[in-house]
Length: 194
Image (cartoon, rainbow, N blue to C red; front, side, top):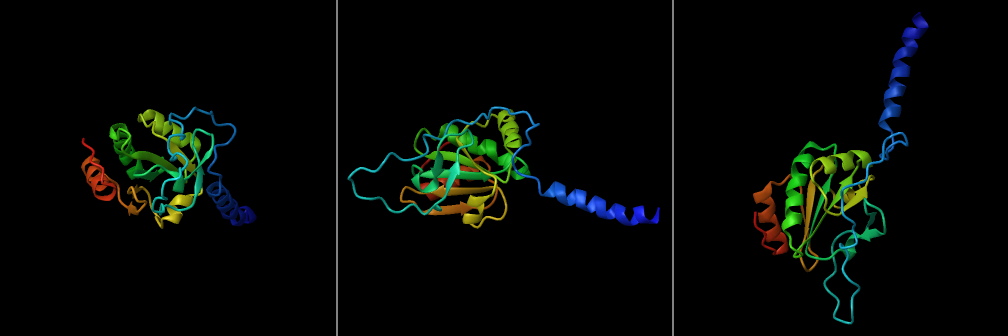
């Protein structure tokens, strides 16, 4: 009996540690629900013609896969101006903010490229949250949090604003509708309404 009491805490600690290192990908036993997001093929700018080169895009030289599949998207190829929201379904402030970002995407009328990056998340969790909340804008998948690390953003949510010249501003707190409208105008020059 004494041996069991000495070994039990060790066995429990190993069980806890092994659970914390699980992959961000769902196990094969989880049901695969189709994601509600639209394809990412509208995010990139068309190939440059013989016109003068624009100012360099200050976004990290990072390619991420579209959540729905297809080609990877290099952030430096994104049509500008742009608003990029980094979120995760496990993040309570992200869950409140994401519908606000979707509202911006719905009102952007082609004047802004608006999309999200699902970070440090499981596909099934992100899919379920998005489906339950009417989130359909293009979304990239970043389980390793590469973008958050690249823009030195240790916590989520974060919203990246990129102006037409490629200058980047990272907003590090959740936004409501009025705050988002103000930040879009200030950092992209685009006016959107409620």
